[in-house]
Length: 237
Image 1 (cartoon, one colour):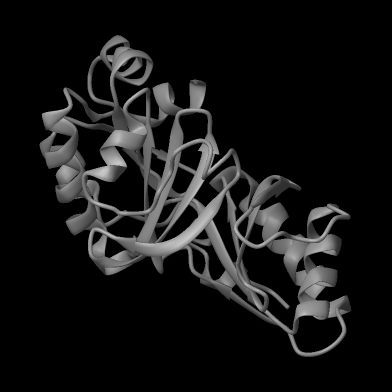
Image 2 (tube, rainbow, N blue to C red):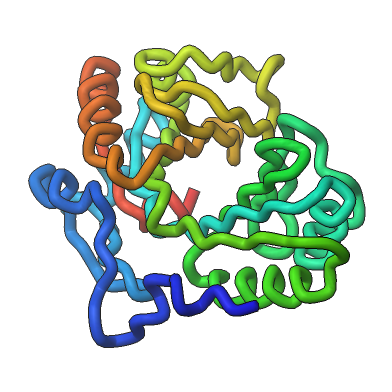
């Protein structure tokens, strides 16, 4: 099984893939570079400003270029597939994602897992999934949703308060510890929330709603003294 033909990074040097939030990021002053086949916001002209928002207030950043794969199979076959692809021997726990093999393995149901990885790990993660799918017992479905789901990172001390402005999912640390993963309503649309850092949340919605999500988050962040930041500051934290 090969997933490469569906991936934006497979276009090489020919065309840069763009996220649904790029236009709004540019309007906000984004400086963009091509990385791993994508147009990526690296900063907004002042990296120190980005770092201050992340350390002291709240910030958000476009994470749509993340690799996103959806795996479906019977529960036993899915457990075997994930173990083979990730090298992680333990079973996935409902509501809890596991980070292994360069990706987050997020159980949606007993028969579905969402795999999230950095673009630079995309080829390796896809190859591992393809190899594990070929070896798994039973029928396995692996779908590349990289351009099917848009993503925003919410980061900084105010990340949970920012999410609460447009989403009812309870992300208090006692309820949603590190690695917790929740499907639910996000800004009145189906989505997912992953707590992938101490003061960091990853929000995913359908690709066509990426621009809408940016608008909702930007408005909420402004009221909290926050704003957008680039990948250089976000990923350095």
